[in-house]
Every structure is written in C-alpha cells, then in structure tokens.
Amino acid sequence: MRIVIGEGSCGIAAGAGKVHTALTEALRGTDASIGIAGCIGMCFLEPVVDIYDGKTLLKRLVKVSADDAGAIAKAVKNNDLSAVSYLEISEEDSVFLKKQTRIALRRCGLIDPESIDSYLEDGGYNALKKVLSGMSPEDVIEEIKTSGLAGRGGAGFPTWFKWNAARKSEGEEKYLICNADEGDPGAFMDRAVIESDPHALIEGMLIAAYAIGASKAFVYVRAEYPLAIIRLQKAINEATERGLLGDSILGTDFTCRLKIKAGAGAFVCGEETALIESLEGKRGMPRLKPPFPAEKGYENKPSNINNVETFANVSWIIENGGEAFSAMGTENSKGTKVFALTGKIKRGGLVEIPMGLTLREVIYDIGGGIRDNKEFKAVQLGGPSGGCIPKELLDTVIDYKALSATGAIMGSGGMVVMDEGTCMVNMARFFLDFTTKESCGKCVHCRIGTKRMFESLTRITEGNGKEGDIELLTELCEGIRSGALCGLGQTAPNPVLTTIKYFRNEYEAHIKEKKCPAGECAALRQFVIDPEKCKGCTLCSKKCPVGAISGSVKEAHIIDTSKCIKCGQCKEVCRFGAVEIR
Image 1 (tube, rainbow, N blue to C red):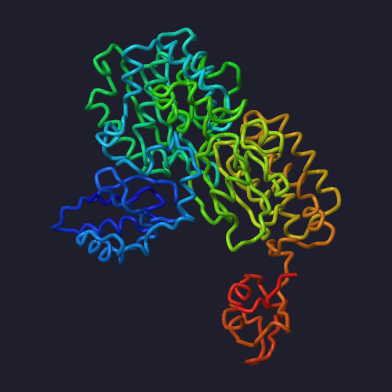
Image 2 (cartoon, rainbow, N blue to C red; image 1 turned 90 degrees about the vertical axis):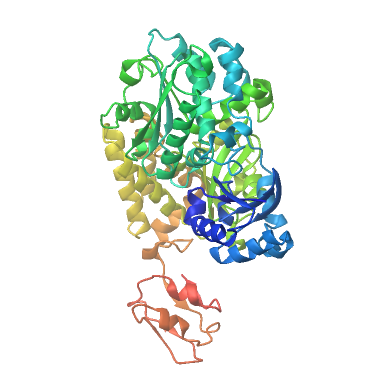
C-alpha cells in the first residue's frame, strides 16, 4: 500500500508534518510507502491522508492526528482498512470534490509536488512536447484564442490577445512574467497551485514563452509563500536537469530560462506595471499606460504577464484542444474558475467550477451552507477590489458580466462568505483599512481618498456618524474611481459602494439610531442578561475579565454596563442563551 499525506501549507498548519513523522515510525519495517501530495482543496478536513493500492484510492482519511498513526498502521499491516473507518471522509463531505470540475487543480493533492517523475507519470510535459514537435507560435496562440481563456488574475482580459500583442511587438528580446503576488485577504489559489503542482505552472509558462518568442521568464511570488518558493525552485532545477528548461529544450532550438523573484508582499505589486517596477529593483508603483507591457515592459522590452491560474490551464488546453475548454462555461466566460471559499462557511477550501454555476450552488451545494446553520447575509467577491453581493442575489450566475452587473468583480477568486452576525459597515471598513495601508501613495485620489473613506467608516462604526456621511462616502467613491491612476485605487471604493447599495439600512442604523444591527461594532453594542433565561450558573461572572457581572448562585445575574468592556466572553460561555446584545 501507498500512504499519501496532504502537505500543503494548510495541511502542515493543521499538523500534517507530525502525522507524517508518526506514520513513518509506526509503519517502519513494513512494505507500505509514505509520500506527500499538495493541497487537495479540502482545507476544512486537514490533515488528509490517502491510502492507495497502486493508483487506486482505497480510503481517504480526514482530520487525522499523530495519535491516529498507530491505528492506521495496524489497519495497513492487517490489510483491514475498515478498522479506520471512523476517520474516513463522510459521503456528505465528499460532495465538496464531486461537484467540481478541475483543470487548473487537476493534479493538486494527487501527485508529489517535489517529484518531476510524479508529474511525468501523470502526462506532464506532453503538451510542451506537442507544441515543440509540430505547432508554430501562431498555432499555439490560435488554440488559446479558440479556448476563450481569459486572464484569471482579475481583469479577465483575453489571454490570446496579450500573447499576440507581445509576439508582434518589435524587438528580439522579450520577457514572460508570472504574477504570483496574490494579495487579496482570504485568497490562496495561486499559492496552492505552486505548492501542489509547480510543474503545471512551468509547463504553461514554457508554452507561453514559445508563443510570444521569449527566452527569459520570471515568477514574481510573495515572500510570504516560503513553501511555494522552495517547491517551485526544486521543480525548476529538476526540469532543467531533464532538458525541459534552459537551453535547447527537448533538443529543439527553443531556449527559455526561468527565475524566481520573491516580492516583499505589497498588494499594489499585483498590478502588472507596479510588479515590473519591483522586478527591476525599484519601488513598486504603477506606471502610466500606454505604453502597455506588451510594448514596453520589463527593462522597456516587450513583456507578457499572466497569473498562476491562467498558466495552469494552458497545458490542458493544448492537450485537449481549445474547443474542449470553450465548451465549458458561458457565452462570455469560458472554462473553469478557481475560488478560495472562506469565511462563515461549513466547508471552506479551494473550489474549481465551470463558469455558469450560481453563487447559491457554490456556497450551499459545494460549501455546505453557513456554519452553525446561521442565516446567509452576503458574499464578498474580488477581495478589496470587489464588492458584497446580498442574499437576494444568491442566484447570480458566476461569470464576468453577471458579477460585474452586481457591482462586484470576479477578481482573482476570493469568495468570503458572511452570516447574519457580520456588520456590513464594519466589513467595508476592514477592506478600506487594507487598501489605505496598501496604497503606494503615487496619486492623491488613492492616497488621500481611501484614508478619508476609512476615517468616515471608523467614525460611523464607533457611533460618531452624522447626517450626510453616506452622501460624502458616495462622493469620495466616485472621485477616487475616476481619478486614481491604477486598478487598486479605481476599485478600492467597490466594497463601500456595494454595501451602501445593498445594506444602506445598516449605515442609517449606525448613524441615526447609534445601533449596529449585527451587534458586531463594540462601541454600539450593549450586553445584558435576560433574567428569565438566566439560571444563575455563575459561569459568565467567572469568565468576565473586569468583574462587571454580579449575582448569586441560582439567581439571575446582572451586567454593570459602566464596567463592561464588551469583550463578549459572557455570551460565548452562556449555555442558556441568556446573554443578549442590544
């Protein structure tokens, strides 16, 4: 038998490394082999351990701890896996993967990301061989055009058009760049692909480099992704040793060298021209466009930039044909899209679905609905550059046009789910805090405008809002959208505009009534104990850090609001629902 442990960042954080060590010791002296895989996407079930017989999956064990190693080893030795059925993934949780269509993630969690042989055994680099053995650069671009693949980094610009523009630009020296500077809060799609299937990125980039005529390529990746950088560098070394990267690739006259650039983690460097500035060793600040990177990019030479997910689709398209990819999705949005499903969701993780599914299908059918069976309130799509979509629009189709009509954007794929306990004003404030800090400061509209919006939202959430604040915020939003230099500034107002559009009543409650309907804003909430529900168990008074709760055993307790610091511990520990927020 073959034991495979999911060791992406999420798995390791959940204890996969300890599980690996314990299983290695417990299975010492047996014929069972132990290997690793990346993230299969089921972050809510990590650590995940798969047991194979050859290539046949016998059991998928979830939420495994080091303490389970003995039982697993015994089951493997006795060839009786029913003994660990208590760890087996449930039929309900299995739906998470069964309802997905995986292309960019097709090997994630299944192959060893640190072994080129594992990738080759699964058909890796066949697309590159096909390209170099009989396709012209124009043929490759035409296949990508047929597929309808759009950039998965956020803008959704046709991939073939960018490739074609770079190819037709004058100059012998051209560059290919992968944008792996994934900075949206709650987004981790690119990280997972690099950690779990780094050769898919390399192969996609090699095909793109061949198409545009580039001999040098870079992967600009966040320094906060150390495991991704380690595995990608190992993959680059292995591919170079096998003649799949470097000079005279596969015995042809095609040459391409690939280097990693670790970025400092500035959100603005997700904007392609700011990324190029950083890549050149300068401060990451956007350039004026035109000229576009296809004309003057890195070192003022023609350059093409796509993100990780875009490149991860390329080899599948070449192998299976552009028409097969375009057969999935909608008229305006072809293929599949990867989302990082996070927030108040039961089954969080990586989801890849064909364009055209609804938000409801992703959140409820795949994600399992809202944690603790609470009411769904909204979903934030596109991160700080996106917007909040309310429950009445849950049946919105996932494609670029339909999402844009709601005021949100597809973005790179962050999907943050919120429940009834989320304050939408505070949510807008959270994203404005992020964009204010991440602004590069080059243009006044973004540097000052986002700061003023953040200040206004802070006042409102602290109970100091006043009449006219909503109108002021709207005016600021429009000014920033029209005047900011780059996409970061132009889209920064989206969370504010969409929350005002769909949750204006919450803004008005904060301003006029000095109340937070969700009970989340500390300055606007008051904790009280319902005397009819209180059993006098004294647990709340024992947990109160400032001694604001008094009362005798088996008698209703009282909260002294003048002492209460509104930490919420009393509500968390109360087993009778007696503590309420007003």
